[in-house]
Length: 354
View 1 (cartoon, rainbow, N blue to C red):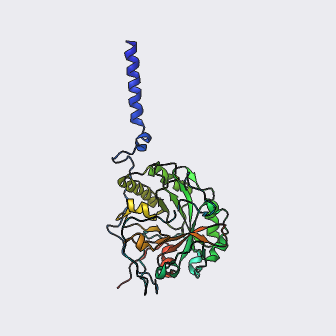
View 2: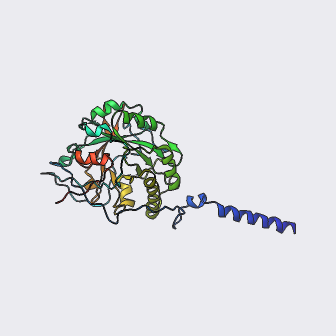
């Protein structure tokens, strides 16, 4: 009688433990819906109308430290080979700029827009350790350039960086559910003091729940008028301690949970940053009502991501600038100065009449 009683007690204990643990279930890559849920966030029923741009011609806890001959962070990947066909971009005549998908909901600022929006833009003055000839599609033809930084850039002289041509900066804030970039708050304050428009990005970690990661980002990134929309950085990171590559279905589900939670908190639709291989595996034809920030350092985004509208283009991972030791990522906004002022001021833009 005593032995069966012990066995019954052990069986009951195991059942209870199994019923109360969700972390173990989430850690398994099972082909079924996860336990992550999201409250509804109103989304446009179709892609947001395009905005013509005026132009004459065209990381993580396992984030890899920069190496000597290429000092740049891993998270935000030398150019990848793309396995799907893309249309050719003409190299003669004027190249029309792809319209910006400006989909952040209108917001009323509680105070006036930052003074920098009233003054002239700082024009492009960067150099590049590995310059690429983009031909008529050169990002230099676009008006608004900026950078993204993390702890790997060390102590940044933001005034010099601004004078070199940086009008905005995306700053590494968090990755996973427990890592804060040690330079985030310093960069966040100093970029603003130097007159740059600033935003924060999160490196998504595929071995933590989306809800945990959203909570961690919200805990560490201030909600401030005038800040650029938050960014979710999604890519495959071969150096990460997390070796999981979830199914496309789970990737999309996790991203949606994370983005919905950030949108509810910040009142801005998050921007999706991605690289060619991750886009090919997961994002083709998805999230048409979200703005994209695309990495394409060897060819124009229209070749690397055919048919995808974009808001920001990361065109170099080997930029050189006064104010920064080593290399820095260079980016450009899709639009002219008027469109930049509207976007940076938190106002939604509508398509111009034909």
